[in-house]
Image 1 (cartoon, rainbow, N blue to C red):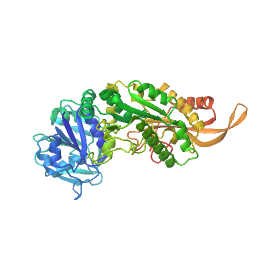
Image 2: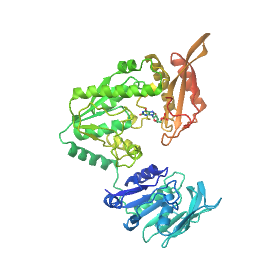
Image 3: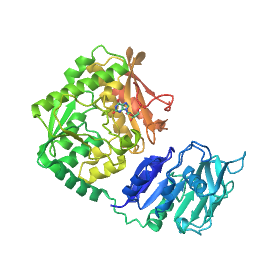
Image 4: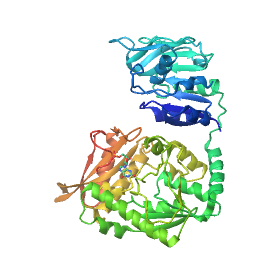
Length: 510
Ligand code: XMP
């Protein structure tokens, strides 16, 4: 399989670059900029991309790749900092822009003269996304400028003889109008990619690999009904059938009907053991109102329930985890031992008898996991499910948890989700849910006074869940949801809509 290497110089869009490359059916990996030249040679890339980064290339300790990277005969595309780095390391010069000259943040139209292969299909003016305070003042030998913006005469540079290209703007960001096309030109026009990365092939290859690795051995995994664990389980089951045992711990903190839906979607294709542990979790959580303690108790209880089930199954050879590529990247080098302390379940069981961990989704981005799920024939309801936190509704019932409160929020949340879907907004909102505040207020129902709970609705738009904006939901929708909740759900007389962004708030309430 052909591979593109992305060297990471610390820019905020680095994962996005990798996703944009993969979207074009070319496999790539993101590695630290300090990757040794031997490792780069072994990786055997068809092309290399230098990412952006917050540094200034002329500073002593700014991150740089091994200079021999320019001698491999492999095409290189530098983006933003990566572009300046290439110019500087090959003999050009980079300087800080003076006030108002060559410094750009945000959208900037650039003029492409169409002279180089990277912009073969792009002539004339097109919008780009810029974010730089330095600029290339002098080009290295062999390079020419291929695009200009009003402030920056070197918005793109190229040396077609050596196949080195640089763009000052960010082609991976959607605000760059022709960004996708530019990356495509690099991959297909310059690196000669054949487009051999598809989820269909990945599925076939992984199934073979899993079979070869596991032989006649046994594997065990926890499934939560979330996208990652469901896809990992379906892939493993396709490879080794019922030698995979899946344990689904229903902690009683799921949304309305969710436990049954998970069982229905996965039960017939997996050797699935469902453990109904609601009583156990609720009694462990009794009287607890502090958010971190709730999480800790749930995590520990989960591991204990899982361990007990594992003991009944007996020794297994492999423990399967649904770790995905962003977890691997975020953990550091991409090579370090990454045993995701499964944030859904709060740590690895230390009492389960297994030889090795296997992570079949370790190299996939979330959208690829979804695509693989479709290849495996999982239902769309499971695949496009919005994220749901491991501790479940426990962190959406503020304060102490009781069965009664959980039932209230399950009903309110189901109404909100139903109406979001009916309004066609269920796919465009990043995450949305109802939470039960720990607050009771006075209301009037019929002719009487009520003293009931306030439900908070939350809906956010987000790219990565690190930051989020509240969704501008239509008033009519909020009106309908509010009317239905106070009418249909017992013990609720007030509905609030949360209009805080993250930061300063978080997505969840606890
Ligand atoms: P916050 O509340 O931190 O949430 O802004 C960001 C995203 O992470 C999810 N989340 C969790 N997921 N276990 C999980 O598996 C957790 O303990 C947890 N806490 C938050 C949250 O739903 C959102 O998608």
